[in-house]
Amino acid sequence: MYELSYMPAARKYFKKLKDKRLIEAYSNALKKISASPYSGEAKVGDLAGIYCMDLHCNKTNYEISYRIVEKGGRTVVVILAGTRENFYQELKRYISI
Image (cartoon, rainbow, N blue to C red; front, side, top):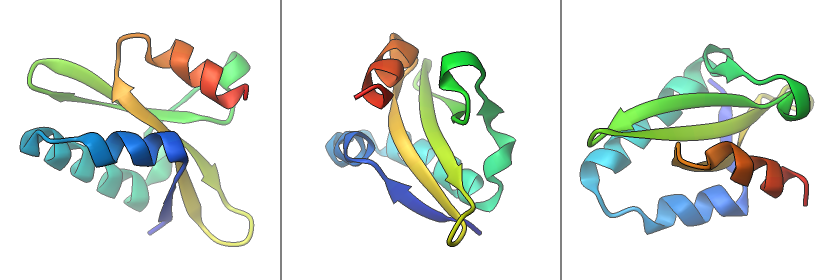
């Protein structure tokens, strides 16, 4: 099992969630990522080194982006989470800061 760590944007997003089904869907996805982080889709190009996992809840697509850190322990850093709409533009903007 990998330890999960959250960047401020992801922590803020999860804190705002109210829908119990969506919270459960994210919880299940994060457990799966913690158990097997390489199961997500590896990105290429300007998002190289980042993995994403998609999930579906209430007929809406959601994404979780994360980075795997093997040095000094086994950690998964959750970068961003949210709806699929404009997710990658927001992710590029967030990681370029």
